[in-house]
Image (tube, rainbow, N blue to C red; front, side, top):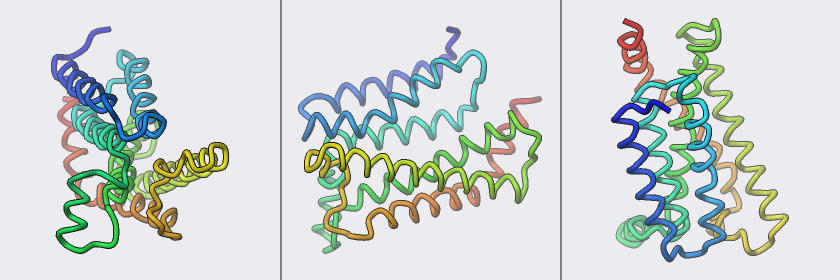
Length: 203
């Protein structure tokens, strides 16, 4: 497998963070559940790397998302120390690290989906592409909520830390709403830069 030097660096950063996260995590079962999407993503990238190489912008975004996941796995999303400090300092009603995670769950896949659709479909940059990207991101978010529900039904109280609802009965709706916000903001802020990156790549 012919890795570019930058991509080797990205991989090493992820592996070091992953190794740190598995050392004395808050709960090993929760760690596994939170980190599993990052591991699946890594496997997909490795399998498709030579056949379908993404831009460095997308790889950086994926790395950032993966780091958020493994940090959440180490501490659990409800007990991430820095966000506990924010909660206590600003008298917030909860630890908002999980809200960040779900925002990023829309923000990062938006650019991934956009790049794949531009490469693999006849759809060009425009309103239809943006609509499809946002729809896919919402579908991903809803699917993740269904997975959380399935894990909770299957394992009972063992999944409490994985769900991270922190007593909020509207947590599922907030999660999907924030993923939607993440996808929309991602397109509004990054799509022009993404187009320029893609254009440079094809020159």
